[in-house]
Amino acid sequence: MELATRFQVPKLASVVSDLLLTGITRESCFSLLQKSIEFNATLVSDRCLELVARNFQVLYPAIKHKLNDLPLRVFSALMNHPSLSITSEYRVYKVVRSFYTYQIDEEGVTTLEKSDRKALFSAVRLAHLKYSELEKVIRDEIVPKSLLTEALTHRLTLFEKPTSVLADDLLPLRLRKRSVGRLFEPPSAQQIA
Image 1 (cartoon, rainbow, N blue to C red):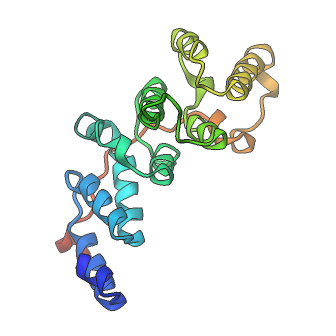
Image 2 (cartoon, helix red, strand yellow):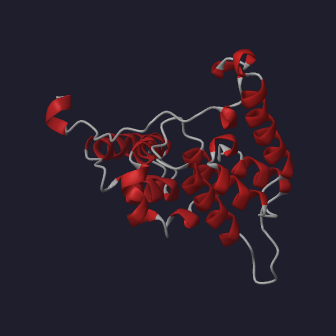
C-alpha cells in the first residue's frame, strides 16, 4: 500500500485494498484502520471502522490507549457509528473525555474548535445515562451546556408526557437509545469465494 501511495499507482492500491479487505479479522481491524488512515485507503478504513465499531466492547481494553491517536474525523465517526457496540453510555463519555483531554497542549489550551467539542460530545447519548452518571457529567465543565440542557429536557419530557414523546426516528441521533451491539466477525476468504 505504501508503494502504491508513494508512486501514485491507483490500480495497485485497488488490488492491495481488495487483498486487505479479505484478510480483516476482529483482532487486526484496529491496526489496519490506523495503517489505512496513514495511506489514505478510504475503502479499507471505512470497512475497518465498521468492524471496530461493531466489536468496540470487546476491543476496547486492547485499543483504549490508541484511540486518542486517531484523527478527529475518524474518532468522531467511530463514536457516532450506528453500529457502535457499547454496554454503557458512560463509557462513551469517558472515551470522548479522554480524547478531548489528549487534545490539550502543554499550555493547557485545547487544539479543538468549540464546534469540534460539541460534535465530539454529541456522540454521548446523555439522555440515556444513569442518574448517578448524569450527575457526574453535569459537573464536568467541558461538556457543552446546550447538550446537557437538551438531554435533561428530553428526560423531563419522557417523565411528564410519556404518551406524547416523539417517535424515535424523529429525534436527533444523540437522543435516541443505542441498539444493543452484536459481535461481528467478517466473512473469511473461503466464505466469500
